[in-house]
Image (cartoon, rainbow, N blue to C red; front, side, top):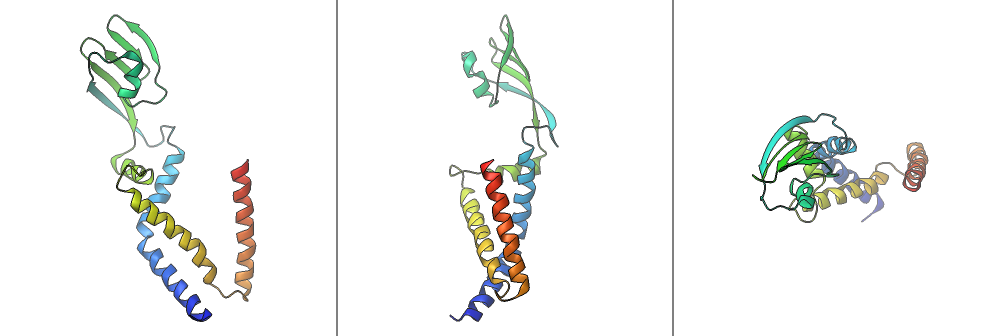
Length: 170
């Protein structure tokens, strides 16, 4: 394959893969920004939850059973255990608490972004990651190396690499 054909084909693949992945790129961009604020209440609303747990649940396992990070018991009076978000009745096994959650569609978007090999969506994440890597590589075939725009682009590339390395190592 000649160099001109390779340049032309890379541009064509880059263009159509970009169009094909436009929606998923928007989802990943939005959910990525939302994940930056995951430890805040940004865009979250309070949900009241009542959950029945086993009555014989060990107190040290309560946070795990409620799927709460940084769970801490504040006090215990008789059969009622008080924690920051609510209460747990050891006699009835009923936990009443509040949880702050993103709106449904935003929650689904962040779930997609965070999928792991335990979930079927991980194949989409692998495909998307490889596609982004292709975009990185194919972008160097968008302009001929002898042109001024390509040479200027190389300065931006070096600058981006340097900033990335600084951010990684600080």
